[in-house]
Length: 265
Image (cartoon, rainbow, N blue to C red; front, side):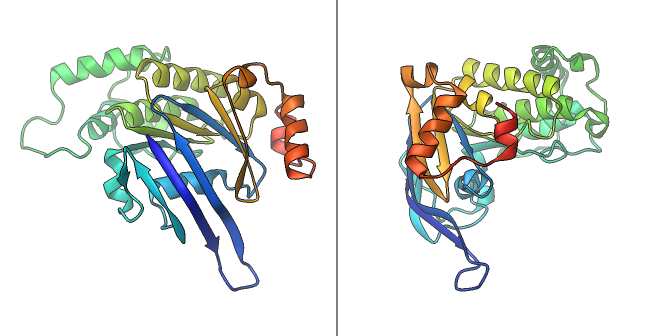
C-alpha cells in the first residue's frame, strides 16, 4: 500500500550544521498494517512522516501509495490519501469554530462546495453518533468552540476528523506526547479503535516503548536516519522493553539514551 524506496534527506547540506535526517530509507507497508515507530531524538521518526506528507521533497528516492508515485506531488494534493494528527492538540482544527463545524470541514475535504445549508440535520445526527463512541460526552456539545476543549478531547476530535473519509494512510505524530498519562491512554485506546474498526493503514510515531510494543502489528526502530529494527508477528507480541533495548544495543552498537523513552518503560 505504501512504498518508500531509498529515501534520503539532508538538511543544511555542505554547512557546519549538516544533518542527515534520512539515510537511504526503504519501507513497505501492506494494507491494514498498523506500524509503531520509535527511536531517540533526531532518529528520523517525524522526518519520515514529513516525507510521506510532502512537507518537503526528498533529495533522492521515491514514495508510492497504491502504486502511484507521489514523490513530486504537492502537500495539499496528498490530502486525499492521508490523514494526520500532530503532537500539538492545537494543530489540525479550527479553534474558533464548533465541533460540528470542524467535523463538517473534514467531511467536505476535497469535495465541491455548493450553496446549501452548511450542516444538515442528518449530518448533525451522524456527528453525534460518532462523538458518542468516544465516550467523552462531546455528543451533547456539538456547537462548543473546539478551542475551549481539553487537549485530550481535542486530540480525540482530531482523530475523528483525520479518519472521517477513511484515508489510505493515517499518520499519528507523537499525538499523545503533550497529554497527561491518563488522557494519553484514553486517546490511544480511541486511536486503536478507529484504526481497527475502519481497517485503516497507520503509522504511529511514539517516544513510549510500552506503547510501541502494545499497539499495532509491527514495530520499527530508527537510529541516525536509518531503520535498524523491523519486528512483527509473534516476535512483536512476545517483545518486552528490556528485549527491545538489548536488540537496539546489538544492532546499533550503542546504548539507547533517550530519557523520555527510558522513563516511559
